[in-house]
Length: 353
Image 1 (cartoon, rainbow, N blue to C red):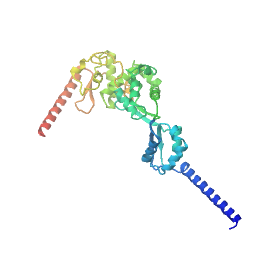
Image 2: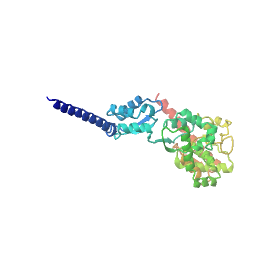
Image 3: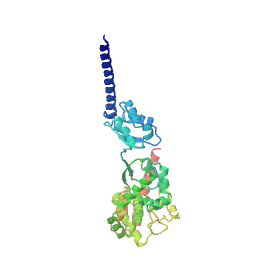
Image 4: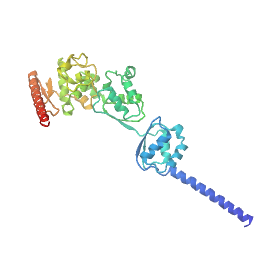
């Protein structure tokens, strides 16, 4: 072969190598930047203490990474070790490696729903409920719920902070700080208390916090929503007449919710929350009342009932009365049925032995 021929072959070979290299680079670019690399939709939670390797393992296990090497390259390109941000990120079957890498570096989070509902009558329970849905730890939330100076910024105290919380589902970023969470609670509180609701509270001669106090007692009395306005009417009638509320839920609160049943011996506890001992409203709400209970206090059923007790039907409803004699009759009916049921249960247990 002539020298000229060798040169031509060398040039062709070099060209082929360059073309191959270019093709290789182009292929990697396409794989890393354009081609979806995950088989499943997955919510990726990145905590501050997590390493890049742990995040990659989580993606592999949850999202079903198709080409792990592609993720490695994308993470290296975005300098993930130095730039990865904590957060809640959604990966799906359309996500590319570079998109996920950028998402984690730029903090493109998907909001998290934080739901506060159900029975919320202790601060530690509220703290646990929040921390189970958000990155913040329960101890930090509990501290905030008892921090007088912190709560004062929102117009509340450790005693009446239950009134701040309006049960609902809040859309927030998972990484929200304690301050951001309380900012959102206050925002929703202000949104709930519209001019119309404030006017209704004034009609009942109650402040907003007093509405929450009465609503918390109503919430403690029943889980039958249709009874909320009736029971609210009873307590408002008693309050306006200067009659002690004598609400069992307040006694349960005094005993830190350790009672299975309120007995006569429990009524003597000396606490401003004991409405058997002290007239008027207790100092603060005894739980976080649901919205329906707040609405019931703002829109109580108008009636003359002063008393109520559990129904002898044992269906969770109540019997209401205007007079004490009528109330006593209802109470005897309930006690008689309770005694009958207990005897029946005892007989059944004896028969099975």
